[in-house]
Length: 131
Image (cartoon, rainbow, N blue to C red; front, side, top):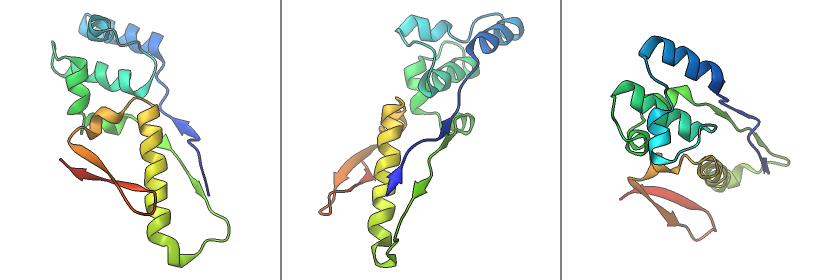
């Protein structure tokens, strides 16, 4: 099984900052600068949207409640299977989910799962359960 992200949202930061400044009167990175978040990844984009939605929002808190802004971030992560065995569907689903979760963590978006805990399973995979 091979699972790798092929594409993800890539913000054109210079234009985003310019257009936002023109229409809103301040940079969308203003709140990011205040807490030391560097623009450039999906996490910082979601954080900047939170500040635009409610001025003065701590961007780190905004990402935690980013349910509706998550629609602005996309990851394309296909799963390539060879010799797929239908008897292993549940394991393959969990393995796929684990890889996806690991990529989400790598892209600094793990905060969207703060109300969940990682629960290890006996087959070496894990699941997320509400805390």
